[in-house]
Length: 290
Image (cartoon, rainbow, N blue to C red):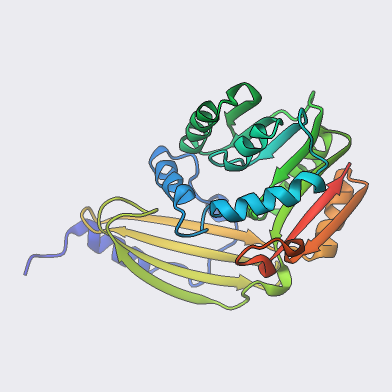
């Protein structure tokens, strides 16, 4: 029997000695969105129609857009800000309908795809896609009619960052402009701890054999979950450690945050207001008007 490579042994020993419970927001508490290789693999997940883990399937996304169009007061010629736009699947469709869209996202592969998608759809002139951290972009000098922040992306920021982001978005909207935010329903979120593991040779975590060890922790005092991933790359023994935090909000708390951000009216729609999504009951969609 071949001896265990030293790097593999060190990785296993590090996993063995991991802290019993992680500290929330350690090392950023988020995925490495801007890493080129990771962003390429994440793009594959966004475009995979067999699941909705990264982006919703086409039919569900179109149902959302049909609801959002009147809810956000959109019209041909409207200026829209897609915050965390991913590969532009919502933005380009809205541009098809006549909107002028600014989309910002951290992932280089997604931004590259969004630009290509806009060109292929013949709406590149109505789309401006930028790779940037949405917490650091310049929100001044804009006059958007509407903005969207979908699929729970506000939850990956600490509360203080989320409040600042909402305030910045409100500042970028014209008076009467509306923001649509989609967040998990705190009352329905899984509040148990758990562990899981699997092996694969291709996927989000790499394109060579790997072992994925996952742990989930619910922190009741902060009302957030922390997922800790240990990915052991079996050919090299390299260990990748990732921690993902997901902050939840009660409807009253999020409504108050939006009002503090400068929105004069906030409406919460549990269950996505009846839009036919496979997991609609797990979500709340907010429409906030400046």
